[in-house]
Length: 208
Image 1 (cartoon, rainbow, N blue to C red):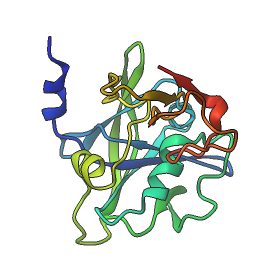
Image 2 (cartoon, helix red, strand yellow):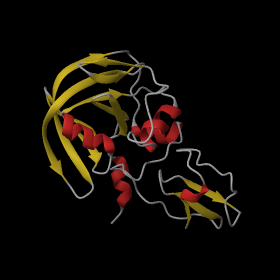
Image 3 (cartoon, rainbow, N blue to C red):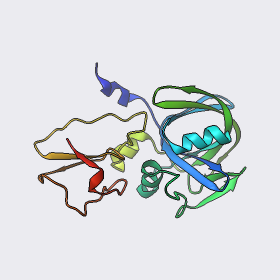
């Protein structure tokens, strides 16, 4: 069985946002599908705090990322937890229908919860569209563009995550948070080593 065929499927890059009282939450997603003219589906990991908030508050936003998106925005929303850090601290956003909309994107789709399908790892959430706007004519970012041009890695919670195999004689250290792989001739990482993707220290790395 060759899992590489899954890489031929088409994906986009989105930030899914929601709001619980005064707490703004969000995470990166690459699996969004239009079901019909007023229904969309998103796939989020069961362990994501954003998933928890959406299921409680019954409302979410799909922010469609353009190709000129800064990698730092993806790092913040893709590899940090909304219940631990304020992901919106240095982000330009506005509230529409009482949910956060990220500025400088291709546009957004606001949905109310409709239904769900739960798997062992992910929840597929169906949303009824209640508002949507085109914010710019910028080119939407695909998951392929993200990997090839921004050299982005895949969070272990993402539907598309696949464990990579060691391809050289160097030592490989893998980040337990975001899955980043660091190859080096060293037997141990330096004490001040930080993950270039999610920023955690050496204690979060495991040697393959």
